[in-house]
Image 1: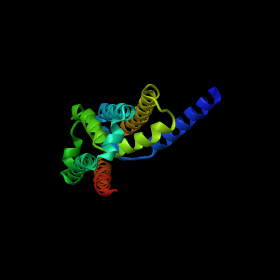
Image 2 (image 1 turned 90 degrees about the horizontal axis):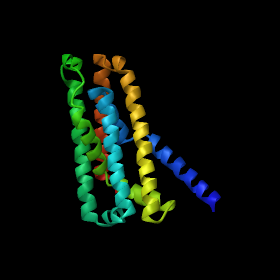
Image 3 (image 1 turned 30 degrees about the vertical axis):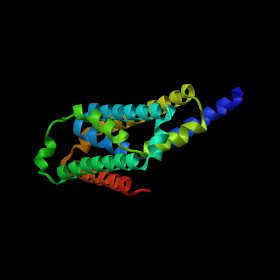
Length: 203
């Protein structure tokens, strides 16, 4: 039995790590906010994302996530909100990319909103409900077992995104060069808009 538990846990960690390191909207948002607010902005974004995942873990463990997925009107409403929010954030980055070059020399700012953006972006993604409802029950079945797995997943995400933020911040002097900064803002903005559009249209 102990061997089976160990195998299941290894499988969970493996699947979780693969999903977490695959670049997605959370990664793009962390890069965006690190460029805007430095290391603090990126780490706060990571905390916001992890908080959202903790919420999904609780909802999955209590069976609420499955109810959300089964309720098409609620699911569609949440998906529309999440998609619109991603597009909004993406358009903000695109706007900065086409502004005057002088504006790019401003000091890092708006770190206070980074946590909120990470949280809202994650909670506004109903695919997290589908993902958690599909992943966690493969490795556990009770509330007491499901919740710790969800919290571990959130902690792994926090660690990975924080490391991403630290790496981007460390390269800050290079990345804040006007031409490079504008190019990154444009790419990240386009990626966020694309994620929003995909979220809105996926079935």
